[in-house]
Length: 287
Image 1 (cartoon, one colour):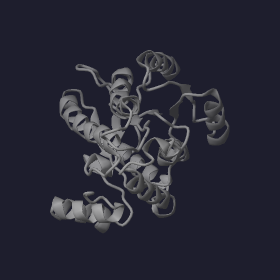
Image 2: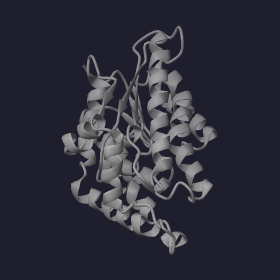
Image 3: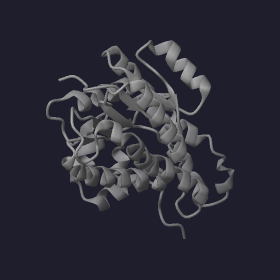
Image 4: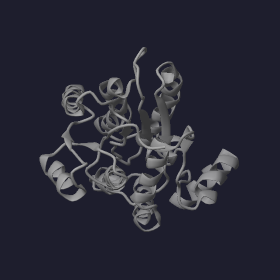
């Protein structure tokens, strides 16, 4: 089965989003990647060929998305979108007890509410309205293993991805009425800039606190993702399958070392997993 029409990919300037655009273009799919900066739009257009038509949009700005949807509607010339890939996301690590609320709000607003805004903006172009006729598109929401498991110092990110998992399940069942399917792709560690950007935050605010040493160990763990994580292209291949499979799964979980990073955390007692993580990060009660 092929994609039924052009695909919108949010957050496409780098990482998984850009890899999805490149893979879709290679498959002959017309793609509308959304980016926030003119320079990123120009780079995508130059690097990815004529099937890629970048659009400026910010998922934290409903007006921006509405304008992007109107622009894409005009370019479609009566054609319907074949897919929406909600990929835009940010990650700001920090202790849940002291992390600034504006950072937490930015993560939730981008990763969760941003996807909701995109669905409302582009959903009608997919046929996600009662009574719409013709071929219907699909929505693919990029979550994470953090949508199923919570890791220390990533509480905001985990909350946003758990929320996106729940939203996707509710939306999938709602949209049965319209014929538009909703599929989740929840990758494990990926070689992507998302954590590198978060790790660039000034950690001096936690100096001299009990959080400092475990945070340093977390940063080492995040740095290791660059060596051990999946290539973004692997996730892009899964996204293409989600968009084209005759009977797609409701959730795909591409993770490196799936036994260790997916199955064991799902099967072992949570208190046991707590202890393993505490030992790894040095999270023990202080006298």
